[in-house]
Structure formats: structure tokens, C-alpha cells
Length: 337
Image (cartoon, rainbow, N blue to C red):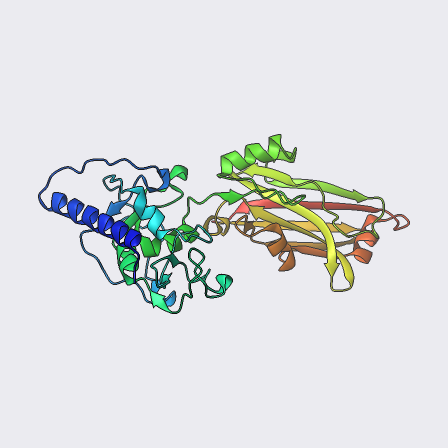
């Protein structure tokens, strides 16, 4: 049973949807209505209310990321902020998806937060039970929203229940800073991140597709958190990050060098790279495909996708008395035809 306030809000939204539908059917332009929530400034309501998916599995509808049909620019319609308030979980403050639960007084919350409140309504403390708010789920099913990465260039408008999936794959979503020396929380597009790496992290910037680096460490027996300065290469109109660090592989201390591409994985596959390390008449060569910075440096490292050198071998390549790491790594990047 819905409380009076919830019923009033739902009726208000339904009247708004019906009003928009009638205006559209008669060919009149849609007026703008005031909204206090900028995220909902580009919401368009569909005249037909469809049944919402009944489970998370059913939400996985066929959809290509940034599909040209879905991404067509549609007229801007502003819906009252009451829609936002109705669909916002009072516990996590995120948008709610089916099943949307409600207590006997009509207060709603998302399925993810229900176990967290021990089956008690966070608003009135009544027992929640297993009541579904089907009216609110149908209101959500009638909405189309802009991608949250609109400011990064995505112009798509998506049904409420498929918007979340799109945003997880949107090619306009920002990248995480690829710097490995700290947990940097900066997000942005590639030009912004390149400037950020140069100005804030003071990384080595190089032009060209070949390199010859020397990595030195006075006490090579210390491998915990041993990470060398990131190097960024500019070639073929793209940017690449060269990583070199030490870590424990089981009980064995090892060094790893690998390359990451500053862009998406589908573009990274157009390039290859090789790494070579050696000394005393011996050498090791690695050839691979750079990983996208969509994958964290830790994920790439822990998948061993790079040139891995045992510490004893690295000290052998270093020469001398093997008490100091002096490892020379050479390599090149090329574009596959």
C-alpha cells in the first residue's frame, strides 16, 4: 500500500507523461519545464509504458555501444525533479532498478540495500516484507535518459533500464590515470590525462617508437613497492605508457616490463611492441600487444602480460658483482598493417 505522498508523486508524474504524449501526438512543440537536477535536463518520456524487466538477467538486452540509431540526437525535454526523487534509493542514493521494494507505508528502496537494512524500512522502520512497487517500475520503464558521459561527447538517449549497461561500455567514458606510483583518482579523456601526467606526475615524455632505457637500483634485494618512473611515448598519433616494476611472483622476486595503450582495447590491437634485455652475450626478447589503460597496471602485471625477468637473471644481465641492478631495456612499437 502506497502512502499518500507517494501516490501524489506518482500521479503527478503519470499526468506529466500523459501530457507530453498528447502534445507529441498533436504535433505541437514541447515546452521546457523547470528542473533542479541538471542530470535530468535531457530526459525524454515515451508515450507507451512497457512492462519492466523482472530480474537483472532480463535487463541484458541486445545493444551495441554508441549505436547510431540509439545515439541519434533527440529533442530535449525536461521532466520534473520529482521523477529523480522517486527513483532514488534513500539509502545508497543511486537510481533504483527492478525489483524495487516498498514497505506497507509506501516507502521504497533498491534491492541491493534491502539486506543492509535488515528488512526494516529506513524511513519508518516498519518491516519491508516482499512488496514490489510495480507502479514505480513502470514509470521507470517509460523514461529515456541521456548518457551520464554526455559532457565527454556521448549524444545517445537510452531507455532507463538499458542506460546503466550502455554507460559501462560507452566509448566516451573517461579513463583512469595510468600512473602506477600512487593511487591517483584523476579521470579524463586522453589529452587531459597526457597533460596531467606531464604536469602533475612529471613523467618522462618521449617522441618516437623506439627506446633504450636503463633501470638502476642500489639494493635489488628490496622488491616491495619498487616502481620506476612511468615513461610516455608519442608515436603514430597515439600515446603509450611503459611500465617497469618489481614484485613477488610466488616466493620469487621478479621484474616486469610492459606497455599500455592510452585508448580503448579495440584500438590497442592495431599495435605491437617488443622488449629486449640482455648482457654478457645473452638476451631475452618479449613481443606482445599493448594493453589498454582500461585495464589497471596491477591487472596487467598480475596477468604476467609482459617481459618477466627473474632477479638472479636481471643481476646477471647487470654485470659486475651482481650487487646493484643496472638493467638496460630496449624496445620498439609498430603499427600492424
